[in-house]
Length: 492
Image (cartoon, rainbow, N blue to C red):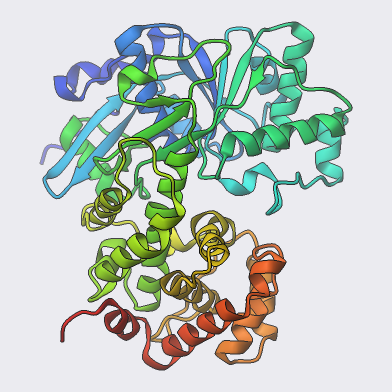
């Protein structure tokens, strides 16, 4: 029997790929103007895609210098593929892979931090973007930089930079010394006011370094949106079927994609607007819309779904009563706290968001969405609760979501299955849960006592606490599925 040898994705194999799937630009034909920290799936399925389309539409030296902060795995595979990879867009209608060629250069920060610092000081680099997750910013819940001896050594130059603040500050200091010109530092992580928070972190780091930040460095805020689940063998098979060559590092995403960017780029920028990005003077209304409607509903679906034993988000959203429950949560509790962008209907936005969760092809797991709750809930849920309480409201369904997180943190689904707690504060949360009395009130009191998550005013809100205990009692007694069904008003 003849053995078929499949060709791997690389520049030499592009001729074998269908025309509809070829990259819009070649990585060997562009020069870097953007340095990006983080080679994870979201960046490759989002900003790198926008950047490729912008270069194809308007030209310019805006290739991406991709930096892997720690692990070499993705970087090495991209290098082996001449910096090419594919994005597989999936929906109920099928899968559509296409190759992306926007990486002009790749580097590894952990093995060559000073090389990354030198590239940050290169005048050709005029934009830095980041997708490194919330925890990599080294900020406490109120936005203060967490400075320990190691970070102090990085910032003052007595140790090589390993952290994101260390790399940025050492690079910006080198840039100032070289007179390399203006630059924009752009957070693309799900942090509220991400540009403002990043600026404050960098300013605090400069103080530790005994230096002052240049005025020609800007920190535009952004709002990013696309569901990008983990790559599986099935995704690799879809890429192979559509491309005809083997891609070792495909990424997968839903059809929906959005990027809202504060247009403040002193050194210029790619024509992202021609690729569909929304350039604006104020990102805040857009990010509030996403965080409080889409992200909060995603977290609610994940926690309640995981408790009910549902593995994926599409399975969870199909729980009887959950969709109408979330419709009410959005309309009655979230929307009154929002000032939406001009021309945007938050109710319609919420309906679109919930419909996106039903995509069975995504396979986004509830456990994946449930991770890092201590970092996500303050922006997704607690702001809504605080605004409702300040206005005299008592948000019943937001309290249910909070109770679901607390029960999830206890570590057991309704059927007794263990639930993993993947969270930067996992140790603190587990200790609080283990030391608490095994009652709904005991669990609520222990977790409300974590100042890393809840401020004193919210933690001391007795009507809110009583409502959370009421929901914890219902979840204990009836389980998540029955609680959702009863509250969602699903006809029997």
